[in-house]
Length: 120
Image (cartoon, rainbow, N blue to C red; front, side, top):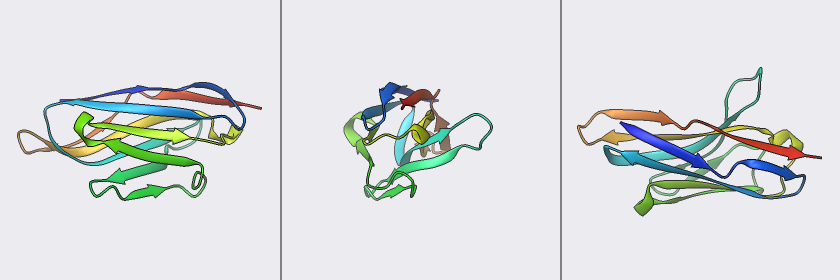
């Protein structure tokens, strides 16, 4: 009932920048938290950054000072600005959105993932 469409991944050189976007649509009553996670083959999915309703952001230590998460509440969209990219940032990035549907039930939705590759 909630669809997430991600965009913005790709190939970039070390030190470069990318901006990821994730737009949520469907039977949304409210959005509590929007976030980005990433995963590499053979490892668990890990938190990159989240932003809550009060625009309070939380970052993984590995991306602090380089990545910025933001949201456009009118568009139900979350962004991840990634600067000073490193090879270890290479992963599939997933958008996650938590909130409530129009019918009152909670939802926890994931995007399809977008590949980010940082070449050295």
